[in-house]
Amino acid sequence: MPNKNQSHSAVNVNDVHSALNLTQVSKIVEVNNLAQLASTLAAAKNNNKKIAISAGRHAMGGQQFAEDAVLLDMRGMDKVLNFDRELGIVTVEAGIQWPALIDYLEAAQKDSLHQWAIRQKQTGADDLSIGGCLSANVHGRGLQMRPFIDDVESFSLLDAQGSLQHCSRDSNRHLFRLVIGGYGMFGVITKVSLRLTKRQKMRRDVSVITLDNLMPAFQQRIDSGYAYGDFQFSIDPASPDFLQRGVFSCYCPVSDTSSIREEHALSDEQWQQLLVLAHVDKSRAFDCYAQHYMASSGQIYWSDRLQQTTYLDGYHKQIDGLLGHRGSEMIGELYVPRAELPAFMRDAAQDFRQHGVDLIYGTVRLIEADTESFLPWARQDYACVIFNLHTEHTESGIAATGATFRRLIDLAIKRDGSFYLTYGRFATIEQIRHCYPNFENFLAYKHRFDPELLFQSTWFQHHAAMFSAHLEQAA
Image 1 (cartoon, rainbow, N blue to C red):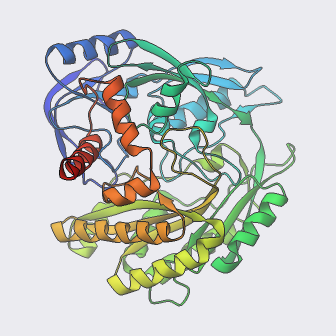
Image 2 (image 1 turned 60 degrees about the vertical axis):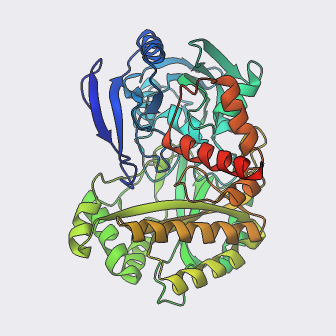
């Protein structure tokens, strides 16, 4: 990361995962305190410039960039401001990323008998900011958890008028609901107070099961007190097990006297080999993955550390050389009522085979209904299905991935499901309206709280144009 307090003129930026959001911003301002942030917003307004907000840059839907905008790099606002050990609440600047927060909590409590830890974090990568996670209303692998909004006690927001707003369930409640899952459209989150949970040692229990047995298996684990878990399904369309068999891993609290055991962690080189296999030999990739996880069954982890993961920056360069083209993975997340999961997955398998979809990785998790955010993606208790699709960086390759996700959204809607707005900009206006009936009101509140549209993103511009065009046609 460049030195703090630097600004850079006219530079191209991109997201770090899909690399499909190349954007030229007017400059990057690396923010490290509230006063600097306020002056940057005031200067942008005076110069008729728009503001975009970034940190980890993992979002794939264009939420953190806007053409010719002043791009705020929030990673410098990374301090822990307060840790209330009585209530189990930690207050942090919004640019702090998960590894630093987890490390802080561990170090601050190293001599404590009873320790606090994070409740949940998103999976797949660790270097995401707390402010970014709040903006996307993320979720993790909790078996009985709501989205991230449930973990947020309060936050502070620097709004379009330059005013600092304290937002909680009791103060500025409407902004609280709009901003969490609001993708940075209402201001800059400056600090966040998070609810923590007891830090526990947990045992990983692993089995390979079929999809038809998954929901009963999840329920059995929940009834037995397991806290986290997921199901990572087979990815080879040539196999009869495609999307129907998977590695089922769950974590159960154990005695505080248990010894931490993590003997079978994969090295970066082994993860890279697995990623390569997922592109060139899918059955072998699943077999290797299953073998590794079965070998790790019975190991003991801390409840916060088990949620961390390995992310290999630039992992696709080697794969591009093997495949002979430039590409990356695009993620989509679909939701269906839990009883509908087997039928949805059978439909998806048929679709992928018919259209030659290149699936690299997939997992099923559970989520409980979000009754608080303005744009809830978890409108009921769902099964979450994550698909990582290999996407060639050509016009036809990107179009094919977009078409696949639109078909998946239709399959979810057919079964009273939904999808996550965070990944991509592929959904039709009809799909958005069906799954997010508050979306037009969300756009209206954007204009109300930010009438000059100071805070911008490619994601917002895409959706604003989509709905504006529809209104013009209707008139």
